[in-house]
Image 1 (cartoon, helix red, strand yellow):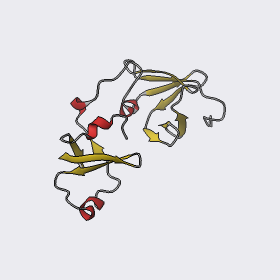
Image 2: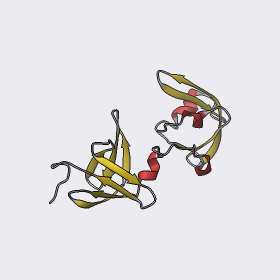
Image 3: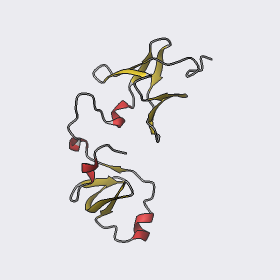
Length: 138
């Protein structure tokens, strides 16, 4: 779940279940990155880690353009809608085939310009303009 494939360069360190491991080989196959990690020597050993997340050090964050952000940085931001006021805080960011979805309590907000007006990281606020029916007012 990254837009920065350079995080998987050979020699980089990633964390699997909190344990640091070096990437010893990497390449793309059918649009997906495949990596080999130090100490995991065969397919059977790798299967034990299916559906686990790999993490990178915070200080290894890539340089971002002004309009870019790290998805994980959205978690915890307050969501304020133009019509409905404060909705809550972002609990999760769901990666969907077409785009990400912000999970704010029971409300799902597509992370697209039609609904998300602005993201202010300094103030910790996401401003939205949602349409009727996206929020259950009861």
